[in-house]
Image (cartoon, rainbow, N blue to C red; front, side):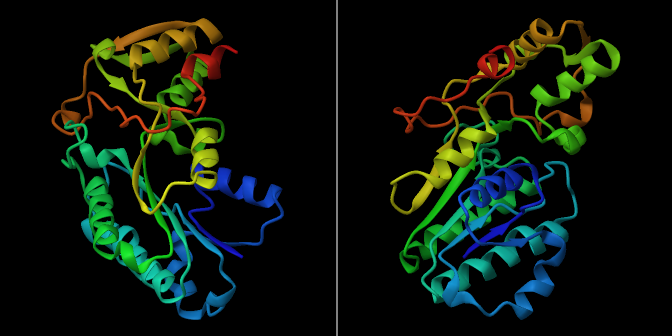
Length: 263
């Protein structure tokens, strides 16, 4: 039996599809029923793995109490249960913990702060787990994220804009905004199939590309044109201008944005 939180989210759904295709029994938890669930679940001796993907993931959420309840308090409770019952854990952290200081913890928003809090808690308790792996996902894209609206990756957002209006909107200066875009299918594959020991790992391609590059690939695939718009004032000081994962998955063949869109 595998516990999967966040199964109804973009990345969680991909984990669910993969696990069910392998015939795994999956206990599904979404954040709306996590408090009820934790009062009644008792089959801990049957759990072979916890895959924790559930969280409030909006980087613009300002309700600190709400973020703490879901992203920190529930996570610490779940992980404590894992230590009590000797259950391996694989969980989603986030590259947002770095802010604009790659490799240095420097969160720019409450969401990133909640992820840092859990990472520190894990580091303090890492020896209590048979195995625990945290993955700092970089900029994830792929099929199935269309419902995310403004939180969707530029790959999906640009595609939707072109389909609806024939043009995509791009911040001025986007050739200087570089992100480490990683396909969601690669995330699922690496999280489920790696032989690393307990620890917290960057999970990205280590080959960032610009938003301009993504836009150009979308235009090449779907046609249309680019409309350049001013950079929003409310994002100043809270926007990551560059992300790049520490290289450690050298033997893995990552999907590039260009391959994803054009091959």
